[in-house]
Image (cartoon, rainbow, N blue to C red):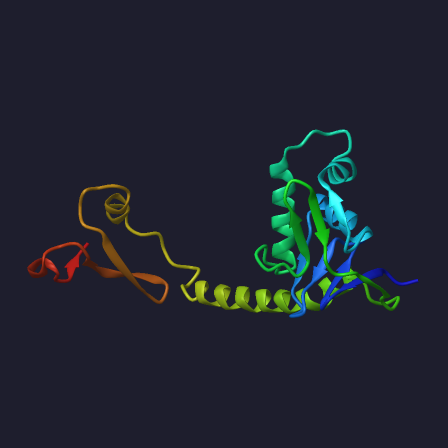
Amino acid sequence: MGERVLLIGEFKYFPKGKLVIRPSGKAVRLKPICAAFLEVLLASPKSLVSYDQLYDEVWPRRVVGHSALRQVVKELRKAFKDNHQQPKFIQTHRSRGYQWLVAPQEALQPMNYSSSHWFAEHWRHIGVGGVMAASVLFSITIDVPLNHQSPPPTLVKRLQGSPEPIVQLSYVGAEPAAECQLLDAPAQEQQQKPL
């Protein structure tokens, strides 16, 4: 049997994976507390669910403030791209509770498709892109020869906090260049100087 899926307008909700799929195909994974809150609202669509019922079902045996309710509603609105001023999904009834405005339609996904398959299908593109980006960065950083000699001790002294100007080395082949260019010196001093 396939994974349970709820169609909510143009959105899909996978309760098992706590995953909301937007019409654009973007996935939003809900926090467990947000998923529990959503499922309480979805159990009674188009009906007012009181604050007390939400406290009892979402936070059993815990005391939470009204700000916890508001935070969860804010996250659900963000997941469903809902607007509190012109709600399409969650209606606020001040001092009473919340109402889910769209009745969900239950649908079954094929056995070979689930929220985890959705992630595998869509996130592999990011994985391939990440590997390609890493290989490009690696090839850029390996451009400097690996068998170069250590810089001379006088140069190391300058770079490790000496008040002298910062220098720029240019490597040629495997040997450090015999000259360096001063970066913070006045214009007349910016001549090539031997080390």
